[in-house]
Length: 140
Image (tube, rainbow, N blue to C red; front, side):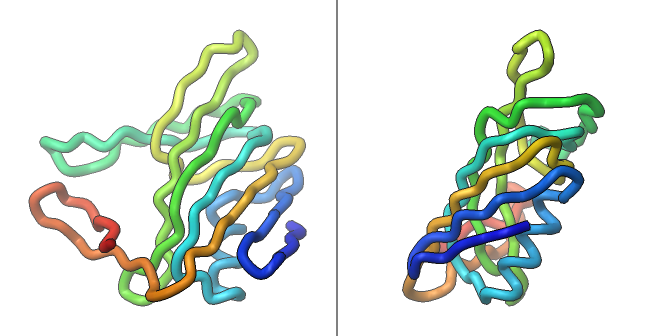
């Protein structure tokens, strides 16, 4: 992983074999990121993505174990119990150019993954658990 910071934004490049969430966690902890917006593109060797079943209040995850194009990643970095928390969604395409997506639990980079992380200044963005929906929601 290599990255550059311009005072507001990070441009991060992940290399083949690196894990997305694990790498973002490293940057968030090292740089004390307490609020940011994430965008990204690239390729994945595999991705584990999910759908939130609201009535049952849990994620149903599926590992897509094949080469994928990462056509879009979007998400946030915030704090939950003073630790970095990620909420990332992704859209992917397979070799037949079929697209699918969901909540990204983790993915392993294929050729590269290019990320743009825009930091949000001011008070930290925090997440607090909401019993009604069963998720930790962003406090704005």
